[in-house]
Length: 261
Image (tube, rainbow, N blue to C red):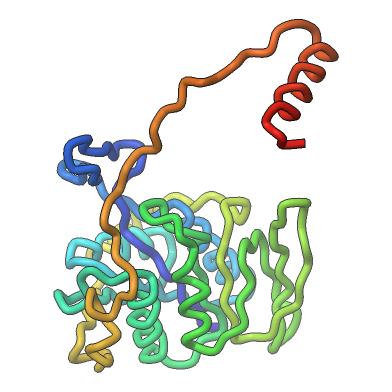
């Protein structure tokens, strides 16, 4: 079984601040980490490897320093990885990113399963995974929490919903976006850390992927991020007083006043 896990290097969201003058993220001095939801997807792949045997390849797109997240993935059990990098890819939105990564996955050859974190913490769009699945003409399930092999052609997947869980059978090859319930990423061990340190990470650019230049980077992106800002703090709060039945009555009255009920 061949599994590809798409991962992303993101700024540590616990340490990111917003420049109030420019309304942009302050990235200077902020450590870069593997997107936490991608860790869940990687753990799902490693569990499949443990249970059924699999080759796990990680793919990331970013500047040369993003190579580190590939080494981090190898240090916990991934077999190999590919870095997609080049100035031509800079400024890509989710559409252009999905197109570019799709080319890399095609270049890797036939796969049984492509996994993504449910979203990236620096964008929160949740668009890239389904977009890549569409480009590769793969069936996709979102918010997967577990997966089992049914037979050579089928996976059984449990996905989360607002009301609980759903069980699906999906034909391979397929794609899944993965939620944190899939499990916390295991720790690296010394042997795998040494393997990761010595691993040769191929870097693929336009020469290797041969993309349509009109579909990559900023020029291939139909959307632009023009500003990042914190929502204004609203102070027009009202605290309801009294016992619970009285508070319920007050709430109903307030909603009625605003024609919300």
